[in-house]
Length: 292
Image (cartoon, rainbow, N blue to C red):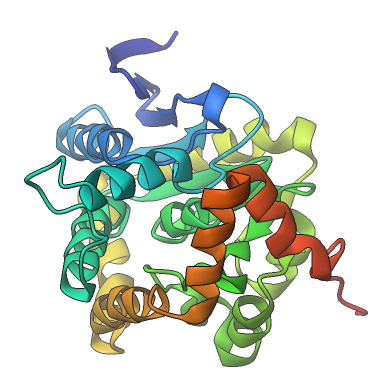
């Protein structure tokens, strides 16, 4: 029997059999990321890390999608307000330093699964694109549905991943292949490349994640923390922490490119939906297929 702990505006949080579930709960927006959602997400993860009744954590999305990226409609509304001088606070659009500041503040929220002591498993179904990959790749393990869609199409016109764990999962050649094209992977291919740990048929995903989380949840949390943190420290020694700082700065730099200006002009003239369609039209299906 699940014991509900907390349900906030954008995140649901409950505990059952030593496993906490943190569920993004904006299905009507395909769980698009906002600052408010990410704040609730961080708070839920910190609470799960604090609870003695929890040994493992699962992150998932409500509805059909894990997370379809950042809430661009809200972001462009904030940019417009900033341009008209309607807010005294930074929105990330006034200068490169403002942009870096905003990206670094968002990074702090997204990075929470990496920093906490307890292991976090991302359960990915449907779309896991753009900011959705930022969220998933900070988790300790990812299990995806075979038909999940994973990638960062925004690199075609809008910037670069402001959280860069790609190279640590797929190596330099595949990181370039995916980020230079913005192409996407299905869950099966992502598992073969190592971008996600494993995949399962969509109707078996819940069971696969529950089995892994249950097995991990049976282990002493202090022992789990020891083994998680030694791996993460190896990543830190290898430069993963510095890479995230550089990733934010490179994304801010990318926001100054002609391609981003052209995309923003399309958004103003045509709206977001048509701007995305124009951005992606030259790439066709754009799903990576490996001839192995």
